[in-house]
Structure formats: structure tokens, C-alpha cells
Image (cartoon, rainbow, N blue to C red; front, top):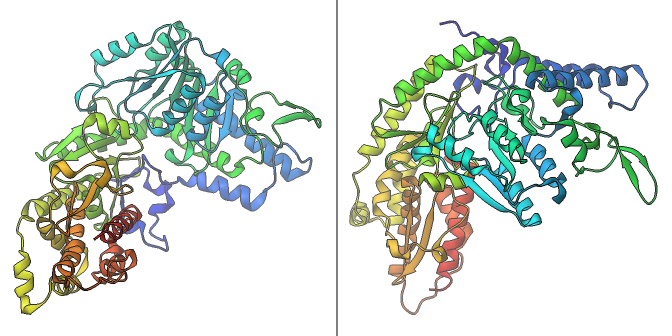
Length: 562
């Protein structure tokens, strides 16, 4: 079918000089969306034709900039149906908006001693409340989800029951960034209001997909991020009921947010300028307004198109027996997280990345939720109006093929086979095999084979003292009987560990009792250079590179004690 929206996103323009878009299937819009043409045009127009500061200059382009900036505020007001444009504060994004609220609250604002948090919250809507709880000696309570991350009628009754006169703050996403669950925030806020609690709703994942009406929701605060709704990065919205904004203390001080300044004191502007100290992101605000207009003008068509895509994705993904879909599937934005039997999310994401498919793997800034789901991380597919059915089909084919590759990667080659291979050492044999492997697919298959050769650290020894932090997956390494042993939940990481440890353990086993191992051979730099000689790091994400650095440092630390 003819795609109704892709022409509005220059990323997909065939004249894109990098041609990256032509080979990329972008399924990571929940992290950052592509930018629509109206948003880009608005930024370019400002930067090219009337770049100047707002609210300060009396000359023509300054007046034009101010007029456009305040018009953008009115657009944001209309987009979420706020009663007054003075209730719209421009921020750098939802994270800053939530921090402004948490930092600005005083003890006298709080009627209870508990902060309620949804189990699926993003860290940005959790950590600020942890800090506030410590500041005012409050307890933080979690509103749990049902099995598999689902939100049910019973879940709603439980959550409503948890909102009591002891509740000081209710913090909840409108839509889960991990599960796609759409929560009944109006019902939650109504109960919070009756109990005298402050309600803070994170609308980050809602803005591009569903209508927002803060008057119907009746929340005290609502936050948005522009870069997740086709606008620029570094721009967002904090909505607050005017009396709530008035009572908040500002947390950013400087020009524009003051009414008068003396040597010993200052008076602040009324909201919203009270919270917009310094030069704002003017181009960003204009891009956000343009993106909001684009969404509103195409709302029905966007929703229809995205639901077609989502239903197609859901039907095909649930037909794969190895895949478990988490969260609600019937009431969701076009986003889903999946868990694949015996395949680490980062391993699958890395394999898909080599095939031009861009999506997110990991904890998605929701570590407590991953603990509750009993998974290290998930693979998240998030769609937007610029995706099409052909991309879903290509993704499904790729994930099926990769699952088949993992299932077939059960063969193994023994260490003796490596040694007997033309009398080569393990290290030399590995270097020969990996250097002759063409491209990631062949190297990836070799790593899967090598994962079987890893000297496994026993489960009882996978303890905190042997844990290697900073990796994309769990890793433990220790020394037993002068041999390095390790374990990882990721089969690819187990393969990398096997490659690294085989070469080092071989050297350890061949070392004369009276000889001294040089620092060079076991140094962090040597290990990383060895992996580089196998042609592997070029295929790693930055997170995986950082993880291998931490692994190498841990190995160096352990070897220094042998």
C-alpha cells in the first residue's frame, strides 16, 4: 500500500546523502523518534531568519522570536487541553520536568507519608522520588503489575486501594515505555485528589500515539518529551495546575526567571517564566509546536495506520513459539517487549543490528521492572507512523532466522581439536578461524560455537565478589586451580569469554613453574588488542565495548594474584 506518512520524514528521503536510512529498519521510536519535516523546517526557519533571544529585545526579529515562542506555548496548551498557557513550562524534556517538580516541593505541600510508584516506571519517574523520600523521610511503595507485566481489572482495584490518606504523591506513566500498557490515569488521579495526594503523570510515550486531555485526567502535573513525538531533542513540557506551579520552588536560577534582584535577595517571576531561567531552547520549542500540529492534524490517520502495523506485528510475533510477549497486548500503543527463550536480548539486538534492524535491548531504564519480570532485559520493538508492513515482515523473517541460527549453534569443537589443527596453539587456531571468517554472521556463528568451550564458573561461585559490573549482561569471573573460569547469561559473551580465557589459560598451563608471566601478556590493553586482532570489536555496540573493557580489567586484576 502507499505509505501515508513517510514522505513527511526527511530521514527516509532517497536523496539522504548518507543512505543510512535506505538500509535501516527503524524500530526504536520509543527511545527517540525520527523528526517530521514541519519540525525541522520550524527550527531551520528560526536559525536562518530570526535567530535572537526571546522576551528581551525590542527589535523586529526579537519580537518575532518572542511571538513564535509564546505561540508554541499556546500550541502545547491546546495539545494537552490545558486551561491556560501559563500552565505550560518549556523544559529540556520529561526528565528535567519531573526533577523540577521533585526539587520544588516542600514538606508543607505533602499531606501523607507515602509515595506511590507504578512497578513499570522509567528511572526518571522513580529516582527523583527516591531522593525526595529521603529528604522528607517518606516511604516509597510500589504498585505491582500482574503476571507477565499485565495490567488487569484486579490490578486497577489493587492500585486504587493503595491510594489512601497516607499517600503524599502518586507518580505513574500514562503509557509504559517498556510494556506499552496504557494506564487509566484519570481514575488514579481522581482517587489521589480525593485523598489529598499530588499526582504526577509521565506522558512521554503517550504524546505521539494517543490523545491527551489533562483536564479530564485531572492530574496536578503532566510531562512530555519532544524527541519522542517527532520533534527535536532537548525540549519538553511541564504542565502544572497554576496554583501548583505557583507554590513550587524554582530549582534553576538566573536571567529571565527573576522579577527584581538586590544584593541580598531576589523576587521571582510568576509561572511559567519562574521555571525558565536562562536562554530557552527556542528552536526546540518551535519544533515541538510544529510536531504537535502535525500529530493533531493527522491524529485519526496516524492511529489507524499504527494499529494496522501493531496488529500485524502482534499476529506474527505470537506465532513464534520461542517468543513471549510481555504486558498488555489488547490495550497498548504500537510498542511491545519480548523475551526469547534461551537468547539474551542484547545478543539478538546485536545480530539484528548487523542486518540493518534498529531496536532496543536491555532494561529500558526500568531495572526494578526487569527484576519483577525475572528477566535481565527485553527486546523492545516500538513503531511509529513512518513504519510500514514490509519492515515488519523483514523484521519477523530476521528474528526467525536468528532464532534458528542460535538453535543450530549447538555444535562444539574441543580444545584438543584446536591444538591438533596443524599443531597450532589454541590462540593461533582461534586467530586463524576468526581472521578468515567473513563478516559478522560467520564470526557470530564461531562465537556461538565457542560458548560451549567456556570453563564454566559454578553457580555457587557466581557471587557479588566475582561479578563484573558495567556489562550489558551478567558476568562473573574468578580463578580456580590457576585457571580462569567465568559465566554469562549471554551466549555471545560466553563465546567472547571462551575466546579470551582459552588463550590465557593455555599460556598459564604451559608456563614453567619458575618463570614469571610478563605484565604485558595479561594486561588489559593486550586482551583488548587480542580481541581486535580477531576482528570482533568493530561489530560491538558501545555498551558491549564498555563491557569487554570491564571484563579485561577484571581478568588483569585476577591474574596479578596468580
